[in-house]
Length: 433
RNA sequence: GGGGAAAUACUCAAGCGGUCAACGAGGACAGACUGUAAAUCUGUUGGCCAAGCCUUCGUAGGUUCGAAUCCUGCUUUCCCCA
Image 1 (cartoon, chains in turn green, yellow):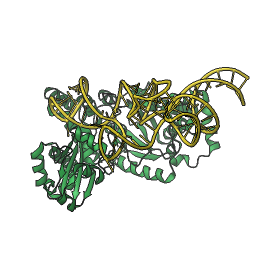
Image 2 (cartoon, rainbow, N blue to C red):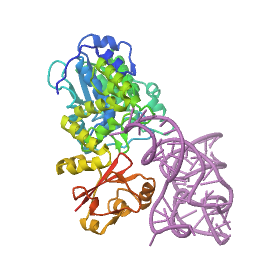
Image 3 (spheres, chains in turn purple, orange):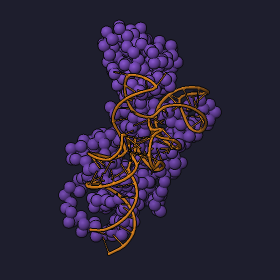
Image 4 (tube, rainbow, N blue to C red):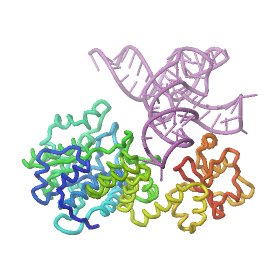
């Protein structure tokens, strides 16, 4: 994609958006010198990035917008070692095949956000495996290890916290490997700044230290705050786990819903971080939102902006359409569903758990519990289904049902579907055939 | 190498021979209230053919009418001494 330039300087831009946690002295001056190259590393632990990495992606986007050159590093080598930061136990190593698959997936996602083609500040993607693959162990400990003392490495929190429980030499070496990445990029790509989450500070500093001791060079760092929700829970997780950028892992509908469900408190922060809207625009939105909070303008703008950029306008529109229908009240919603063409109907429920039940069963009638457990596995046990029914949590076709409900052909929408809900937001679909 | 302590459900954590499917807290899920927010209040949180029955308290045995609770072996973790 192409990137429109802004005039605001990079650091100021990040500052008002609340995206800076810490910065090395001299960093601002570095960016004022002209086109500056900076990099962020992405961990290839899965074949898709999730919305946690979206913060880092946005940083690179801002960097490029303010005229600097972003480098996205995918860690083919570091992925083989495993970053101990924030981990309490030794990490499983990835095998080569998975690693390659993951790198490929991540690469294609990054291409959606950054401009890799045009101009002096075109983004670049690098894989640290390229410079590590022919670097022998002996050469590494002589050329790199010599410059950093064990005392220095042990002082890092990521290491200290693991001294009790144990840590392999492999993970202990991680900071040196990442540090060398920075050195390599500094030397070969004139990359003078490393960006990253605040948990990466220790690793980044090892890099600047290596550059200083090995080559007497200057290098800088900016870290972003780790996102948390206002209630203290982890950002980027929904009931089903991570929220992924890959639509086969997290459907656009669910993706959109994740953002729509953002609390007011978080929404005003997120909109600064995850959208490219200008300060006046955002200030205005927040003001409007405060005046009429129940309209949830912020959440809608946030969800719209991100869904479109991560997926597409079409995906966004489909998600809104689906949301409108699903969250309408009772009869209205059923009428809406009945009116839908079959393919749209299927799109809406893509990504919703589905089960097929034979049409003949409907003729004779199916008890609600059998339908929810035995026939579909929507609930994991009869007890759980009974419990939910008692709690008045289960709806069939948008109306609450009790334990004695029997499903028959008259419950079929479009003669084929039964819409099941647990609570307000969990949908399941039964297909008769 | 010697000595001591501990292992309980998603997590922390009670329990120390029957009244224990196991206190309590957190989390999670649901209900009410709302705005598909937050906060608050309430309920639920092993399974089943459900006033009953079955399987659970690291693991394998044993004592006992009866064990999460006592004994023995094993495994793992932590602490102290060398």
